[in-house]
Image 1 (tube, rainbow, N blue to C red):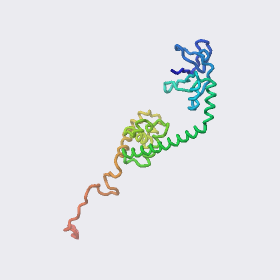
Image 2 (cartoon, rainbow, N blue to C red):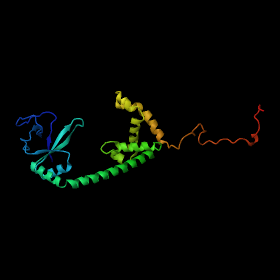
Image 3 (cartoon, rainbow, N blue to C red):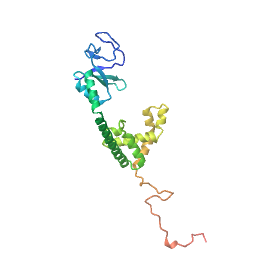
Length: 250
């Protein structure tokens, strides 16, 4: 089990030596204890951010601890870095410098691979949108797919359901696009209307757009330019009346 050191959001004092406020502390029996009293004062802090350096420093350190800080908005503790032995950190830094170029090239290859995979996935999602909503313009489907599949966005396209191209997830992405681009939703939010109320107000309008997109463009119910309804047959004139004047006319 990992040793856990806390970066407190407000000043705490050590329960043993009474020093404080403490930048970091352990909890022992529910009370804060400073690093010196916990026999961790000789460790150095390594912030998160360099995965290779963190991994190597942890592997080289006989004693190490995870540093966390509470995220009030999310209601959980999140990792901030490690406490490791100074010699372990120096050894890890030397190892990282020795193969920095190799790791750089590997990162570039991985980035190119991920970018290509993202392009393929966006194309697959756009095709799926057009399958479910054949009336959606092709460029609009491509735009929705690019937006919802953006890496690191946390949008529906990055969820497991989105990556599986499930109908519910795809419809949610299309609905979100219509909400923002085809209705006054954003303007309502700017005027202070609560999000749920704004969505409820515009639900019918959004449903109408989605319903129109579910119809294939070729399924128009009537001909354009004032023509007769599609599917009707114009009556042929009676040959016997050709050239015959209408009653009451010369």
